[in-house]
Image (cartoon, rainbow, N blue to C red; front, side):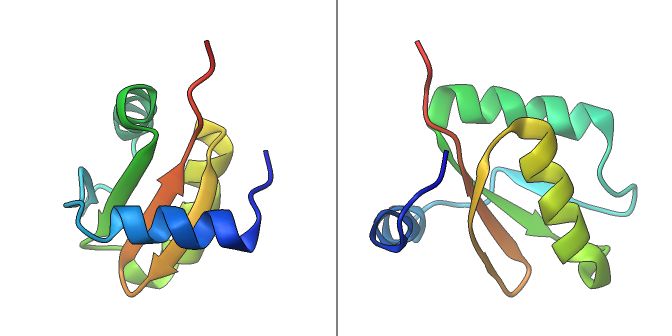
Length: 89
């Protein structure tokens, strides 16, 4: 799945009013958090993730999240990651 820049801009605008559903804390990215992210993506498609700790690793963690959840990174602004995964039915 590859989104165009126009599609990413639209999704970014939709995500603007969302609150972060997942927070990456002191324990880093755990398998449980990956599973929670997958669950949220199944019900919401668009998800915000906040990096409270491990901010220096946010680029690497973002790649790991998108790879393991088979989602696409829409944006990484500051310490907030926005990801998207289209529902498959």
